[in-house]
Amino acid sequence: MDQKPKSIIYTIITVLVFIVLISYIVYLEYNKDILIKKTDELETQNQTYLKEFYKLKDIAASSTLAFNDLYTTLSKVMQEEGLKNKTLEEKLISLDKLTRSDPKLLQKYSKIYFLNENYTPREIGNISSDYIFNKKVEYKLHVDVIYFLLSMIDDARKEGLNPLIISAYRSFDSQVNLKAKNKVTYGSNTANRFVAEQGYSEHQLGTTVDLTIPSIGSVSMTFDKTKEYEWLQNNAHKYGFILSYPKSNAYYAYEPWHWRFVGIDLATQLHQDNIYFYNLDQRKIDDYLVNIFDK
Ligand SMILES: [Zn+2]
Image (cartoon, rainbow, N blue to C red):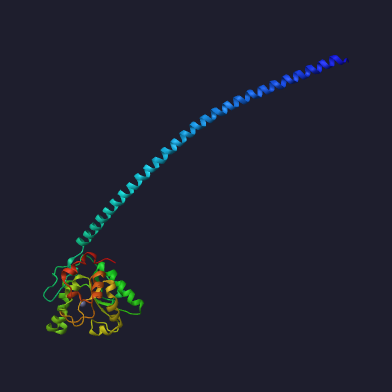
């Protein structure tokens, strides 16, 4: 082949390649512009969204603050109302306790002031024979007092002691029967003395028991020589019991066996102040009535 046409072909090819290259570069540049434009558009859109997002975030934050404020206020109000209700509830409970508690339960009785013969406790219940000296006899007590009495005896037993009940609730009728029976056995003078025991009214309340131990087995002065008596003197108040007629009290004969329930608060106060129940002013005693059965 000739040298000339060859050269022309090369030139044409070169020009074509050049054109293609230029076209490609132009095409790329064009696309780049479009891409930049698109990116700008997206960026603008993104900014708008971000703005919207921050706006919404602000709204949410202020709503949360407002909600928190509202919540705090509401909680406060509820708490205050709750306290009010609680105080009201406590007052109602006290009132209810007071209306249900029997003022006779903390009354002082004497040879002059007796409990009415028609009086009966609100409710009486049987005492388990396990706590009774003579298992054949059924003893009853004010239902609300039984728990305290049995707790006391149970705890004394844990220390190897064995106080047992030899008398508990006595109705007026049973008292009359007892008097009649004793008249036959001992003659009327002895019977009168025996049954006119000062604790008579206290037994009719259903809150009082006479205690003994197996080796004595009766109401006896010698009970005060026992470990059981010593324990009761130191601990009975914790269960709400007091000795109604202690040694050399100003009013009545000494009865170491005769224990009356007056409630833990009053019994503990009397024990701490070393005052006898019958020496305390009746108005002061009555303050303890509302909580007499508190554990
Ligand atoms: Zn008694």
